[in-house]
Image (cartoon, rainbow, N blue to C red; front, top):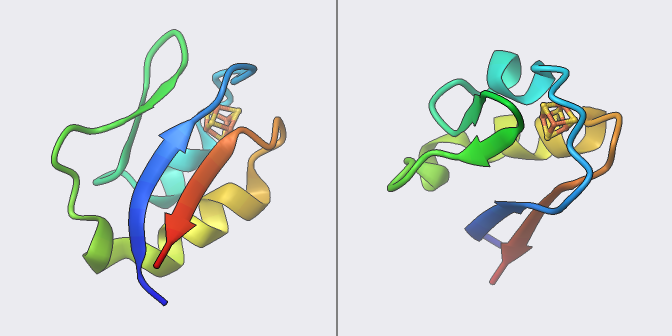
Length: 64
Ligand code: SF4
């Protein structure tokens, strides 16, 4: 199973945790967003960790 897509749903509280866990994937300004052309395949463990830890539960990803 490989992550092929990552996105943020509505409800981010901009806590900054996802950027701390995976700074190559997430950038948090007024809310979090996924960096364009982020190297998803190199940071799958960090993406899963960020999604698990997100206090708002808004980090979603799709595996194939
Ligand atoms: S961890 Fe969740 S709530 Fe916090 S900045 Fe990232 S997406 Fe937003």
